[in-house]
Length: 124
Image (tube, rainbow, N blue to C red; front, side, top):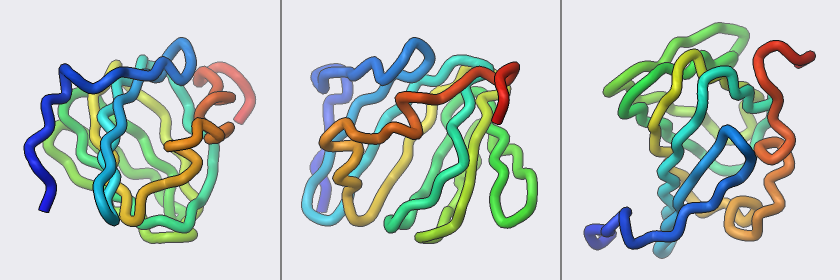
């Protein structure tokens, strides 16, 4: 069982100029707190992990399963393993991503699809 985390005591990582995150992981679970600026595009990608995205404030526009899904405050989106998806920040937002198992690329900082994200005005 996860203990209660003091998110203010966890160091934040500025992934790029529009994406800030804090990571915790324990056993088979990783939780990422994210602060994302409006217009940030997470490029289309898939991963081996299942993912839950919980939005605290703001809105994401996900392209997943051939559909567009808007995920806003208090919404929870499940993304199965190996499903290609992208996300556009429609507003400044705060969200949590929960992964099982933890993502090695996030731990190691090799997540190029986040570090090379573009704004909405650029080519997708």
